[in-house]
Image (cartoon, rainbow, N blue to C red):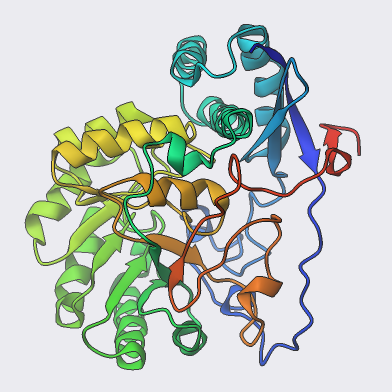
Amino acid sequence: MKIKSVKAVIVKLPEAASKTRPTRLSWNKSAKRAMPVNIYPEYSNLPGEMPGGGLKTVWVQVTAEDGTWGLGKCAFGDPTAAFVNTVIAPIIEGQNCLAIEYLNDLTLRVSHRFGSSGTASTAMAGVDLALWDLKGKILNQPVYSLLGGPVRDSITCYATSDDLDWSQELGFTKFKITNPSHYSDGDTGIRTVVEHVAKARSLVGDGRDLMINPVMSFNVEFALRLLEQLRPYNLRWFEEPLVPTNTEGLAHLRRAAPWVAIATGEDHHGRHAFLDLVEKRAVDIIQPDLSWGGGLTEAMKAHAIAEMCGIATIPHGGANDPFGQHFAMAATESPMAEYWLGTDPGVPLEETVRIPGTAVPVEGQVKPSPEPGFGMQFESGDIADWGSN
């Protein structure tokens, strides 16, 4: 069956069906977080005020000649939508919609002149995820079955949140916290991070996985000094401490601080970026983002590269949407999945879902929908052409 059309679209998401009064506002509305750009004081470090947040989510709809359609989600607004519509669509329309490996190779080859990362890889992700959704619908199978079938009964999730009491109340037993400091903060910044981690360790107790995510806000010297101070708190991993281009720096950190795993990958796009990380022995855990880094096909290729070297693949935000859930259900070396918990404490997770058909963790475990494709429950009336409003 051939592809009739490929286009960037807007999907109308239902309002979260929250009926429960929160006990307080989420950390996500108040916690100061270091990001690369807010090293400059004129840029806010408060959620909702950080620069770069104004680009809309992009959805991609791929329709087969029999009218069946699949949806994929990516990001970064108009530039990505334009890439989908003007670069990728013309080359894959009319092709076999089930030939995902071929279509992935086509889109990668046409994207090379654009760098095959950034906007290009993000647009590729939306298209690739839509193709998997479409294939599952045509074959009447969930995507995880198309990937070879489930390798586990359910997916163990960790909570990314500073609301550690609420995370534990929901049944999570693994936790990742934010980072409040930049390398430019020097000794004061190190003390601030150590206090933050010490408080978190006290709240979750010993014997529980605890991680921290600096989000590219450190340099090598600061990270090494900080890791020595954090050694007593037994961190499970240290996530994305450096900018993604500094793979040599990551390798140096990994050699110099063998007591903690180095994880990174949400800002590394495509299999070649992960091959570079693995070949340089720069990571212990890779973390591709399925909506930014080329999609499910590229994530599975990165997983294969890492698997051969004994490295786990734990996608960025993987448990928050059906795409990452289906990956985690079928990927052998994906021992847990991230659930980004930014909603208000006291509100049950099922009341926070925006993509209909998305499963939520129960006692720290989640099972993806067994419905065809990714199991998303959208109607055609929920979809409008990009730029229509």
